[in-house]
Length: 352
Ligand SMILES: [Fe+2]
Image (cartoon, rainbow, N blue to C red; front, top):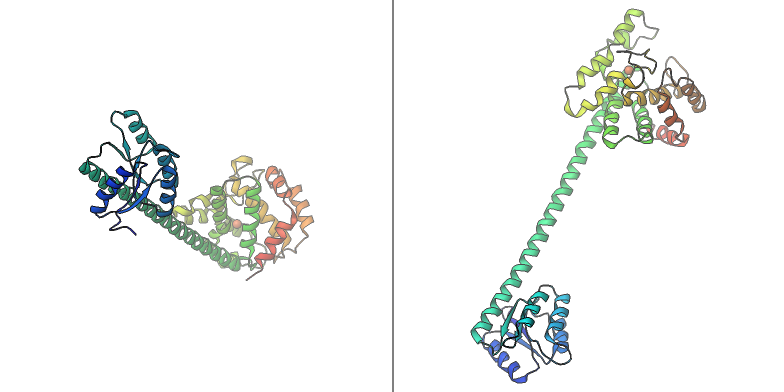
């Protein structure tokens, strides 16, 4: 290959010029290839990829400008110096426009030619190095971005797993229905998507659903686990759990979006719920969606105080309560979802 990377292709139809150039470059440590015209030059260029080419302009078969265009198409980094006649400024400018590195006016001055050749090769090296550096930077940014996305995902998975564990722990303590949180979570997210909520809103709903009863931590076991019906005084205590839950999570920044569900999950569409007795659209949408998801699960699974009913019966009951207990629009969304999707969520909730 080339000596120290010094490798030049000389394209000129004038044998005498060609040999003079050959002699000059050879004596300055260049490996040389010689071509009679543009077409031959192009063949050698494609075969040997010389970093430097010196080409005449006026040649038979394929002229210097055509050669230049074709060579640059093949290798955009090619350093090409064009030899032009005295006074042929037009061709010189044209060759620079097409992408020649430089032009030399004939008769050739040896020093001028060698300096132009060195510069052309240096510039080519710089261009290649810069592009490689750019590619390296892009790869590093890409890697760092991927790593960051992975870390973020792991962090989110950790958050979710922690919340799910907490949700399951709350279920176990409360009514003994394990997987209740997981099912209601699945139902609510399915409904939220069908309702057209954004991914950010859905994430808040997800956290809210998993933590909705976290306030029951503050309810004494004697009330929470009481086998029989609660007295009016006990109900007053029981109904504080949304407020207790709100106070627990509103100071945790990544859970702040869950507050509307935790605080309002016992509100009813007609204003008969608690803690604030909000009515209609004043109840946060997440809490309205949660109410339907929670009711579906409560009705279709055995609980200590009620037997499970069929999915169809639960649908009829939810539809009957649209406009009183539930948001009618949310109920419509719920009824538009095929039962098979809820079946799948139920099946998965039983997996270990
Ligand atoms: Fe609750």
